[in-house]
Amino acid sequence: MKYEELVVEYEKLFHSKNVRVFFAPGRINLIGEHTDYNGGNVFPCAITYGTYALANKRSDRKVRLYSTNFPAEGVIEFDLDSLDYDERHDWANYPKGMLKYMKENHEIGSGMDVLFYGNIPNGAGLSSSASIELVTGAMLESLFDLELDRLDLVKIGMRVENEFIGVNSGIMDQFAIGMGKKEHGILLDCQTLQFKYAKLNLENRKILIINTNKRRELAESKYNERRSECMQALADIQNVLNIDSLGQLTEQQFEEVSSVIEDETIKKRAKHAVYENQRTIKALEALKHQDLKKFGELMNDSHRSLQFDYEVTGIELDTLVSAAWEQVGVLGARMTGAGFGGCAIAIVEEEHIEAFIENVSKIYEEKIGYEATFYIASIGDGAREVKEGVHI
Ligand code: GLA
Image 1 (cartoon, rainbow, N blue to C red):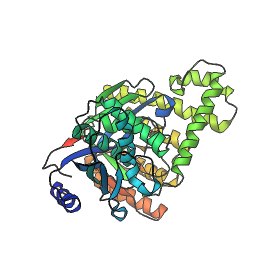
Image 2 (image 1 turned 30 degrees about the vertical axis):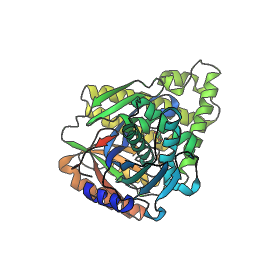
Image 3 (image 1 turned 135 degrees about the vertical axis):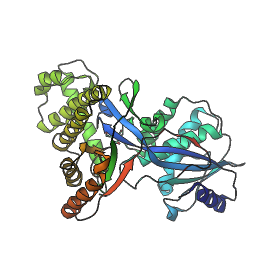
Image 4 (image 1 turned 90 degrees about the horizontal axis):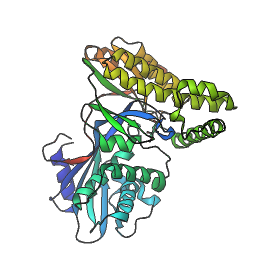
């Protein structure tokens, strides 16, 4: 899709050419999975796939939204003064939630016509929902000259997810999408929200995103189940230690107290949360010393922990990742995001990418019965306004 084509589409729908264009990326997480809601560290980055919003203010209080990704839903219309969740409004509840919460503290003076277009692979676990939240936020901020801290926008996005949509997710996705920086990962401590950018110099390698193309059934309920298992583990440990989150524990501290967790499954979940957090800190250290081999090994350990202790991978992700590990020129590979389907990532030497795709593709299709899809990830900037001529 080209910028100009979207403007033509906008004009057809809303009879105006006078638009401003905004973009928010999707994200991948390099390491630090299921640690954000445990007060641990994460290490995500924004990618150059994402969601575009073409927008213009109206003179009345109507809000009209259209997505080229959901043409069957048509133009969804509601009033700026009536912003409750409405099942019939389907995908448009994400921008609607942003409007509702931003309006609480900021003057949004009129309605608007907005066309959304997303090029994040569908249902791939690359955070298309946080992307549409943040593109809406950046759009409202600019259209109505609002004074907002980026972190506030990130928090509003998370609130939409938690309170408006009802998914109990952590802050990683909105943070990566709001704060992303070209060619950098973000090491974020989710307890304190302190963060550092870390330049990703992968030398002669690229990050591949591999989509399992598996429908993410039960993902939300399993996600919430893992969260409550971790809460249970924390409550057990709090009987003997004064801590606020699993992220505060070192591996050794965990091993010393883990016997207070009676349920073996819950113990495994907590073990993942603690060890994964420490792995994330070690991964940043490795990157600081340009020890890419170590970084790759930590990624591989992360996947094994998500497979055996946290149990959020499934046959599709495990097949992809173990096939990736067998290939020449692979630094590391793991699932990324919530799991239960979605995507894996692999860091692969450029000269071996072609063979990698061919081999992994074949192994996956033979075992799973349908194809995986491969994308090369570029690490880009966070949510912002974009100007004419950008490649969409
Ligand atoms: C989803 C959630 C994030 C995070 C990841 C797992 O992407 O939205 O908050 O918990 O899963 O790391």
